[in-house]
Length: 350
Image 1 (cartoon, rainbow, N blue to C red):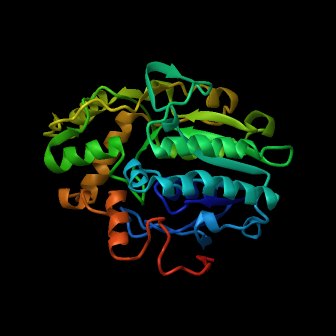
Image 2 (tube, rainbow, N blue to C red):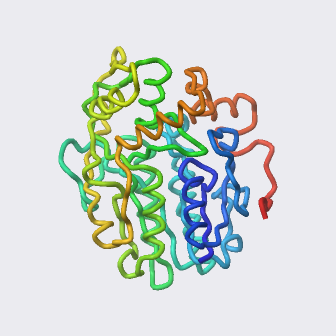
């Protein structure tokens, strides 16, 4: 199939694209390249791609594709809180705009990277896809609105699917240090402290980015009647942890580290446990392979291999909010995360 992946240059996209290519698909990327300087480890190999903002996409840009996989978004609460209106502009209105243009272009399948963050403040009960939404951030609410907007476009010719990813972790060429597992391992290695910034009690469903990528591939290959206009929690039901439990795993794996609670850290309103059994039961091709314990070991090995230091880990290379602020302070992007010196549409990597 010929597939367009938005956000292909990001944290998940740089792992998903090679997986799609190995499966024999013809992949084209679309990205604003906001984080192209945030490379970690292996060099990112860019597929043929469009350098543009999803808010500017027209139907003509999407003609000839069999599917669109939409990952591009503000995917970080601090960045989202920096300007909530921009979060809604990109994650809600921009996402629905992209879906509408895909439909107009005759693209039959649209797979949306949603999030379990839309469950928000939920407590100890396991939640399936029918659970009520209770978002506590603009990011979580924007995903609800995007799903609802895309659902209104679904018909016999246009089939959207919503993959509600658990909290991601794992090594990537665009590695993020602001995700909980990645963050705990990074601080454990560079300071000796497994630094918990809350009281450690919140629940999180956790999923490796390779397993998120496997979910996209499995849904792409699934029969249309199984996945049409359906939402799926993406992860493994047994991989729900309290933050304190994740920290204990990190303490076991990272030598000479110890759990440390940040002063003043209180309960986090974001607390939810998620049942992820529906996707593998309906789409048996989806077979997740990772656990948090294995992911912690992977991260520790990668950080050691690359000589990670605290200065580097706390830099804009790993922290999205710092990178965005640096670009804004330099006058390179505006409050809406658009480049001030507008990049002309161009095809790269052909």
